[in-house]
Amino acid sequence: MKYEEISAYKYNCSTCPTRCDGKTVPQFDFEKDLKFSEAIEDFAASYYNQSFPWLRVQKTTREGYPDLEIRSAENNSLLCFIEIKGQARTFMKIERVLPHSGLIPSETLALNLSDLERYFTIHKQENRSIFIVWCLMHRPCITGTDPQTRKFWHQHISILEQIRLADPKNHRRFRRASGMGDVVQGQHKGVVVNYHFSISELKKGLPQPDSFSQGPVPSTPKTF
Image (cartoon, rainbow, N blue to C red; front, top):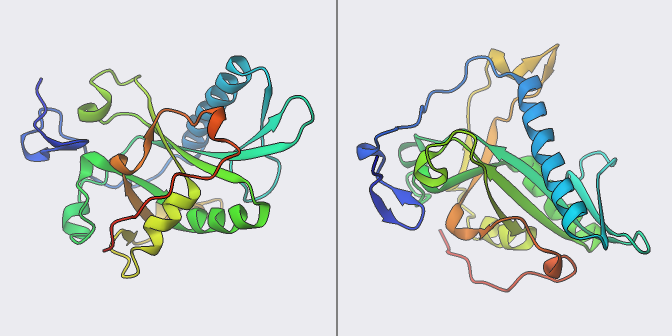
């Protein structure tokens, strides 16, 4: 199978041999989604703990904070936070729904806007780096045709904030209608407002220890 590449991470969906399903899931399985996310968190924590013995990585116990805390194994000092986001669906309608975003489906990754803005605040309060990590699956043009393949990209929260601030007209924000599938046992759990980034704005793989205590490399984001 051949995927028609336009540029980095951009593929022509109209000629795609394995076109993604762009339909909204009518009844979201939150329990399944939680297990999927926890499995990725466990993988990342094990990777750091096994590869870097001078680090101690644990799941956070603080409400609203990123998923993982990275600490020094020597003195338990906090180095940074990592938020893990699993992404197994594609926003196939982004060119029609958000025409001024400049994004196309193959390159697009999403994040709950309220989470994103909360992490901006935590970053300033804690004065510690926060990295958002996306684990991408089931996007054959990017991840390959093996459905078990996972690929990781990440970015420092302050770079993501620069991108957000450069978009005052909210060209990358999308609010969908709330549906029955968003409510579980009387509680609304569905994400209805997402913000979108391009894979090309991120770095490949999981963040490495040499970047944990440093700020991001300054950049000039595109203005919308």
